[in-house]
Image (cartoon, rainbow, N blue to C red):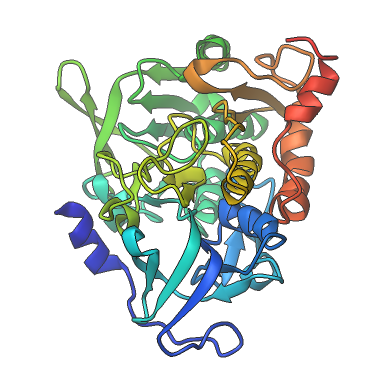
Length: 432
């Protein structure tokens, strides 16, 4: 089993306990256990602390605002601006269990820890994100971060993107989107537009070719924005190759191998700069557990976020099975729904709060502008501003660059931001 093999290889089972955090010898019980201390875990725990004894299980020393990595890769922001200490992000009223999650036994309300201990719960929220799988592309792990092969995905990786962009004076720049789920579906092309704008400003654009290879049948999954981005890419002279999936990277010879998803034919392209949007996958720790659906995601009702089998289990963010884009905006919108429905379960009431699939993809398009894609289930448009957000906007760019990081650190992680739904209603004056 691929997930079990990956689990054995990558999960550290024995971590030294932090005596200030969690040192009970065998087990402990909490009313609420939140597995994962990312955006969804911190936001949810901040809300649940007001309802009862809450624990957050997460081994990380650092917490990252990952949407900023696109701007790091373009030299607009720095790595340090995307990073804070995890101790400053976990809610102070929660017990922080600084361990890996080893497994779940939901029939007995048990979470197993990497140090051999276990935690029991009344209610569980799974917020474990997903795994970035560079290893799914042949040759990529060996050459990533060298030979002009870069990716803005993962802590520290975006620095090399910026280094290579500065060194590029001519040649072929390739940007890829995988034939797999991915965190933030717009990120692989955001950096393309920023790179193209940088090359123009440096006066070397005419010496470079810029191409986007996507496994999707269109440049973006929602038609309104796909139409706008297709026109934008054409205007900027960026080639767009659909149903074209990166399957192999040969770093030393600077060659990328693409598979045509219709014909299955392989094509090799030379590159001087290659930015890879990596395949992503469910984490083995939940994908191999009773909590998972057939695809490996935590199996929840897409409206209530409650598990379809275990009524005292919920899931938020990238790890759940909701069929919508995996973004921080999704976490924000889900956090309010999840909290309301957990309160209803506690009070023995029906679950009335429903998640509409809201997610957002702020697509930087260069020149200090941005296309602010906001949508829900089935591609329904859920724009906040009373303007056409498919049109590149300087105002939207500054929202991403300056306001959204503040909202993340100061509001979302503290449980005080459930997405822009109320702002949308206000700005549209109650209209549909």
